[in-house]
Length: 392
Image 1 (cartoon, helix red, strand yellow):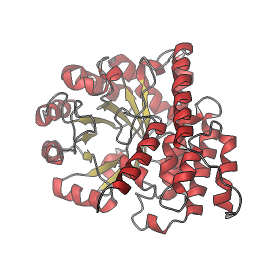
Image 2 (cartoon, helix red, strand yellow):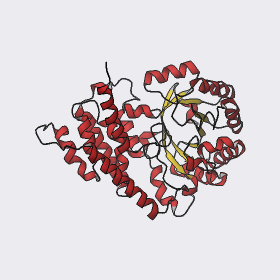
Image 3 (cartoon, rainbow, N blue to C red):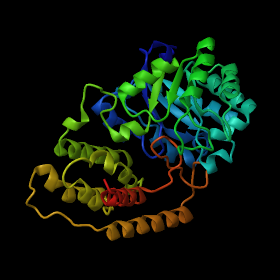
Image 4 (tube, one colour):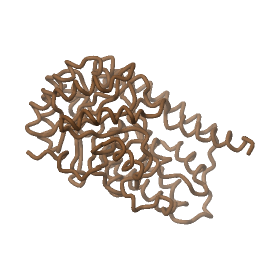
């Protein structure tokens, strides 16, 4: 079977896997704006997929369309035998590759020797790679990881991974402890690149790349085969098409894209996923035009997809004389409290098939979210107020 990693034009660009973000609905939006060279699914629990109750609930996270190819299924876990089974499943589902998550720093993941927790157990990590390859039926098996756990050990850790012979290594330039709270250490990514080039293994860098041009520059400077993008696509959905100037997009263009995303989200998930998940995308589309702040605040209070059009239509249709909803910061705060209360109640009522205590939600670089969408919007408003009060 062909190893697509070896056939990609250098440098290539990848959309990063992000929990509760890069489902098929969002990936279709990204593809429509400018297709990256490779796409990844959200990460999915091997233990959950190997359980009778978990598999039906988790399979929708592995949905994809042919226009996404090459598309890679990403798994997390700590049991080699379950990685073997999930690799067989990925092969059966028609994926082009498999990726093993050895970088997630969420506490409930690492405590189970999963994600970045595997950095502390290189022998188990290597066994997982070998078992995944054994079950993959020829599909290339890559690893996404970090430069260390509590401290930087890039060369030691990457050398362990190379021993198991992954098809590619994607490295995020921070340790588990650093989360996304410090700038990415690109010099360490460069050190990993030297080792991977000697081994003939494609190497991909990840962390803080905010433009296509910056990605090309970093790939050249650090000797990388590719660049993985997380946060950058939230700032610019057209990131992967450098010919598109996002400043040229009108409010109508952006609102149309959001309406399309909501339709795809509803089609994929129906009532199986809380619509509040969509709120993390609001600022992706609703930004940089007159009235955007008020529109975002109004959208933050929406609880159902069917209520969105009533808020968006005055901007989308150009009927600016139609009264627009006025929503205060207090209204957004109340909605945040409601979402928090319902989330806690859901956790008490619903068994979780993923094998972790609660659903992991990623931020824009694939790390644990420190804030909810509602908190993020409130903080944006507060920051804007602080900027206005600062002396020139």
